Image 1 (cartoon, rainbow, N blue to C red):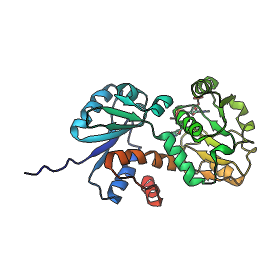
Image 2 (tube, rainbow, N blue to C red; image 1 turned 90 degrees about the horizontal axis):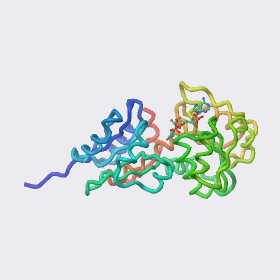
Image 3 (cartoon, rainbow, N blue to C red; image 1 turned 90 degrees about the vertical axis):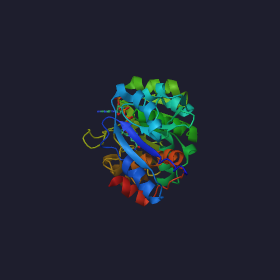
Image 4 (cartoon, rainbow, N blue to C red; image 1 turned 180 degrees about the horizontal axis):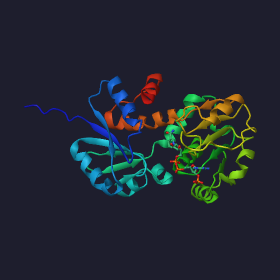
Length: 278
Ligand code: NAP
């Protein structure tokens, strides 16, 4: 009797998980490319994480995405961790290898840069400093990818200054730290302005950094994607800036994972955006 191939399974692990857009996204690609496979959201408590991760490959899982609050913990569980995940200090993608080893990577920085290339193709990383607002987990991925892309300087400002200083220590001499109250004063020579704080997101306070120093040449992007057009992006548009919303980062960060798990590199196009927004 010929053995039927195993149906590949993937998913996303976090808690809570019901809000995640990843299932819609991956299911859209599975359907678009006619791939037999499934993508499942899994609400897993921190204490159960390791047991679940060691069990999933036996159940036919080829990998999973990892989200809050497990992105750091998973680094201790994985058998192999990429350099960029180590630098960022968190992983968002796991690959369950055939030899039983768990491979951890972080694709957030890749997603961030690909989204910028898509939404602001004229942006040249070497053309000037990038101003980064915020110093949380997402900021680490953004800073690491900007430095790798060749941005000459990063001007970093965060409400809690010490968190920004920690990033400066980790990422080196091209990162300069400014007080949060100064954030509005450092944007006038920026080639790129990035909001990596959660400010402006539905249910959170607005970002109150003054934007009147913005020049039309500055590309402005927000990691927040709910709402899609944040107040920061709307104001930047009024100043004549090219703006890039945060949804594309979410879509692009999923591309390498889908390719590794299901063997097909997916396109990020209008239909993909629509599927994620459904
Ligand atoms: P995080 O680690 O919790 O960091 C939150 C950041 O927001 C910190 O810099 C924090 O400053 C700042 N912040 C929060 N409340 C503030 C306030 N009232 N005033 C000033 N600053 C405040 O979160 P994260 O994982 O970095 O995520 C940040 C945002 O990026 C979230 O909205 C998340 O949804 C979004 N994100 C989007 C994508 C995407 O694919 N588009 C990917 C990752 C994250 P302090 O250090 O002072 O607390």
